[in-house]
Image (cartoon, rainbow, N blue to C red):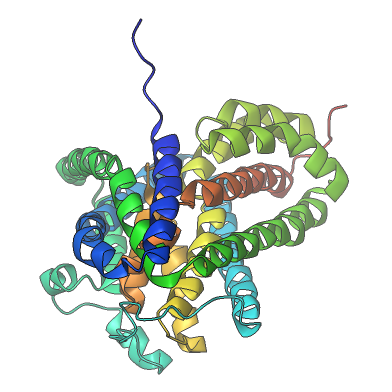
Length: 410
């Protein structure tokens, strides 16, 4: 019989556990220098490949996401109300994530790593908001790509995507080129992500060997911070909007969305959860034609869970690097994560690529990403639950905004 291959998430978990065990052994044996010289370079190679992906993935996925919105002209108000809801809730999610992460940080629950690379901050963003605003708009497209200036890359993607939509039929070739290149880069990303276990093992061994077992407690705390933010967003934003705009009580909302949330937690895929999400939304009273449009679009562009993850992880990594971010720089994180939510959620490994994008935009050391990459699956389970909950809430709200009556089916 043919052996069943271990799934990639299980490979990453196994690599994480092995890295922790080997790291603890090396820490006890005072072999931190050995791990830095002979294991960490393999992790660095993987991180370099991630950094290589950031610009093409962000550029192509955002343009592709904007192009896919062209069909919304046919559905008019439903499409734009849906997108407005998703972008607004994503911005709120970023704020919740940043506030909670700063509370944890103020309580000294996030560590400053000893001898951590990245302690010297290159500081790409200015403390002056107007300077940051001016710097967002590129004067040279190619320099934005070569310098990995992510705010400028996002603006370029918005302009090119909007231009392709505005050009209509004349831009047919451009649409096909974007779709073709995006398919290619998606395959490249799949290959690079498949190397995750090697990078996780190498980096986790080095981190534990140099920092000691204390770093494991810090990982548990950053997970706790993210899940508290997930829960707050679901209650304060989704259940509130379902009650305020659709007239569905929070208890009825969470009870009705429960099956989809449970399925999303185990599958970690918004797309795979779509059939269950639609059944839940329809039972809660969403009109079938509206849920048929809102839910697939939400699986593509609704990234509230990922936005919270990016904000919490960025504060954690900045603290580990010995960096304190200003309020102005946190505003940049909100803007970056919100705009980047257009068209990236359906890409395998997108959460990690988007985190690398935010770190690059803030001038932080992307190598630090490997500290939390090993437990990314645990983050992913919660953020997928949140994304699916938001899709269902949006379907109910848009149904009411379009003049329908939301009546849960018993």
